[in-house]
Length: 174
Image (cartoon, rainbow, N blue to C red):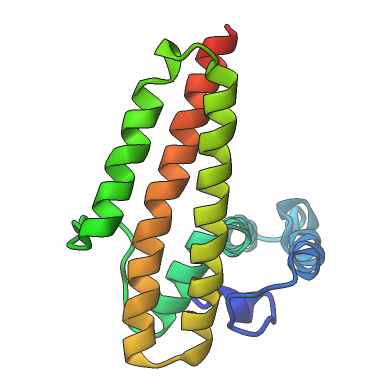
């Protein structure tokens, strides 16, 4: 299913999320099971299925990495649920250094300052990679699609590190 077609939006990475939200609400209202309560059991089931499809599509397009993966899948390059390791030694070193910093937060004299520093690093890296991802996806060439796939894989690391940092911060506050 092409989620962009469902919402009648252009298949591109940079989306107007406000427009996506308004189209989502319109479709939800149109296909909500309550609208089909007087219909046949088949009509009710179809309405429930369509509502589920609309929800899945909305949540996928709303999240940048899922939106990028969906774009690549539409182009024939499926990377969701894959397990692939990196061969980029600089990226691997950066990840190891960030993980070491995370592991040492609780031993720091000023954990909040360390958290803020790591947070800024993560946000800067994510922003830079997301910009590169948008550029790669705009070109729509096989080579750039492969580059976009690599960028998505890297971004997943940063989003995971962000979640780990938030968990550490929460544990320190408790």
